[in-house]
Image 1: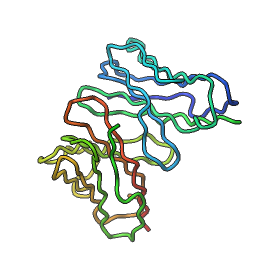
Image 2: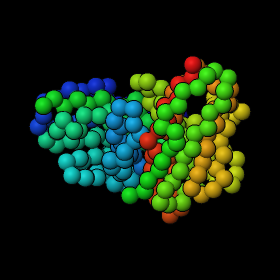
Image 3: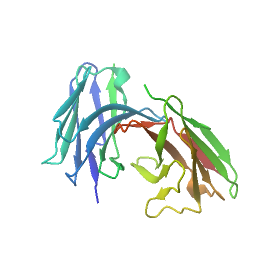
Image 4: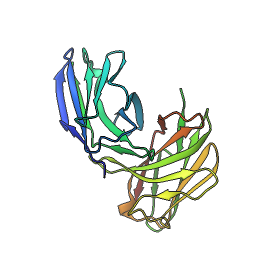
Length: 111
Length: 116
């Protein structure tokens, strides 16, 4: 059974700082790994999707990496801004299409 | 980009009543839709997979008679919480996968259910 863990549970940084969010998964037989953003009381916004054959994906100030063999993914946010404050979720997708989510990392970027 | 809507966004109901939540894919057709539930400070948990024209597949521990799912068209899936109880209070999120076979699931904005 796939289990996804995100560390840290919460992170507070000053504006402008670069930061890394961590995600680990127990079953390396994944189809892809996705990173989402969730604002309080809102739904999910897909940020990046990394296929199992890929090592990383980039979108603007965001870069996500995937190391299947070690069961890890990281989300790198460059030059953080207060608008980046949200909860970031990672989810591993197996062949059955099911997404298994971590509990998320709550990020606060202070002006 | 692909848009998924949910209605209502927030609902308060009395214990014992039934509540229907709609999930619509607005600009694409979805043969498969997923229903998730999120408790505070917990992961999103997949409740069921809804396939157009067939019965939903429920995850272990999810009562199919409690959470009725109907996927009558390629753009609409509904989740009905029957005889709601306070412990059913939660944030319900749907997602949809488009017909083109892309892996990405597009998520709705969620529905906050409060059962009094």
